[in-house]
Structures are given as structure tokens and as C-alpha cells.
Image (tube, rainbow, N blue to C red; front, side, top):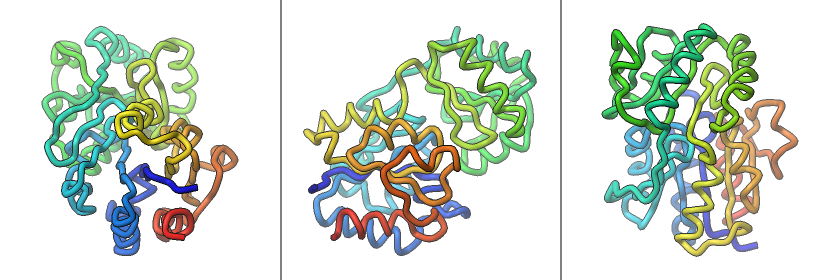
Length: 267
């Protein structure tokens, strides 16, 4: 099979634990690009927290796109033009806020390229460190959120959040709910996930489903792993997901992305 698109999750997949792209991963991605492969970053991160990595991979030099907010936005790397966007409504975000208060979790959303919350948390600090965005702590969350936003995250320690995930799936089955990290429960509009946006982008680029490779590590990657012609997990994948892909390569800290490119694109 001649593959034409390589879709890469970022955190815990392309990036090592110190949030860097290894030289070997970078080298292999550049070789894939030279073979005409459309390389697409697909992350739960906000768009602005992906741009520097895209430039590091020289994606801005090509007619390249990236998928941010777990599929909520598709944008052109070089121009920043938005090709697709789907938001939660203000009312849905308020509903999520009241749910989070009732169930004792923190909640954040993203407005004006800032993380907005009513509380402080070690997990909010992690998101701030990952994204580099300013944390705007407000007195009243619902008063601050006067428009729609791409997504919300409920944050708390993993054991508690796993229980809350089940409650939220029952309470709001009309929304897309997924875990990106054990302490991040992400919520987006109905029908929004990485696979849905890959499908939209592939149609625009005239690429078939079977011509797509996707590489990920977490629950928010599952739809794209199952959608792609070849779905690959890195070895640090959540154990409950190991049998839901086609292939497992080395971990994010051992150049799993480079291994996948060498095996399935360069050879």
C-alpha cells in the first residue's frame, strides 16, 4: 500500500516526555515529506500551542494543515486560515460548569487564546505548561464565558475523574467526551473528534481512507486509529487500548514515530 497521509498525535506520541521532538523523529518525518507524504499534526492542544512544532518540522513550507482541539479546528499551517471549526455553545459550556461543580472537578475552557478557569489546580498548571497559554483565573466562570468555545476540560486526580467520565457520558451523551490524559477529561461538540476532522481534510486533499497512517497513544486518539488505513499505537499506549490498533511501535521516548515511518513509508 502506498500511503499518502501521516497523522501524528503530539503529546506522549510524537513528543518525548520533555515535550520535544527527537532528532530521529524529525529526520524521518522530513524524509516522509520528501516522498510526498502529507504530514498532519493532530492534537488536543490549542492551535497556538502546535505552531512552533509545525514550523520545527517545516510544515509551514508546504501546503500543510493541522488539526487542533481534538478535531475542533482544522487550520492551514502557513497562513493560519481556518478550514473547519466547530464550537461548544455558551449554554453547553455553562451546563458543563455546573456539572463540574456538582461532581467536584475543576473546569477550563479557552477564550482569546487564554486558559479560563475559576479555580487553581496542579492539573491546570500542567495544561498551562504544555500549551504555554496564559491562565486567566476569573471570579465567575459563567459570567466570563459569554460566547461559544472549541472545547472544555474537566480536571481532577485520575481515579475520581474516571468515575466522573461515566457520569458525564450518561448525563451528556450528545457531546463528544474523551480522555487525553488520566487527569484530562475533554469535551467537544457532538461529532467532533480526530477521525471526523481527518475525514474532512482527506476529502479536501483527495486522499483515501486506506492511504492514511495515524499514530497515537490515548483514548482521544482511538477514533483516528480505528479510522486510518493503518492505525499505530506507540508502546506507552493506555493498556486498555493496546488491542484496538493494527500495530504497536516503540514508545514516545524511544522514537516510535521514526520506527513507524521507516517500516511503513520509507520501506
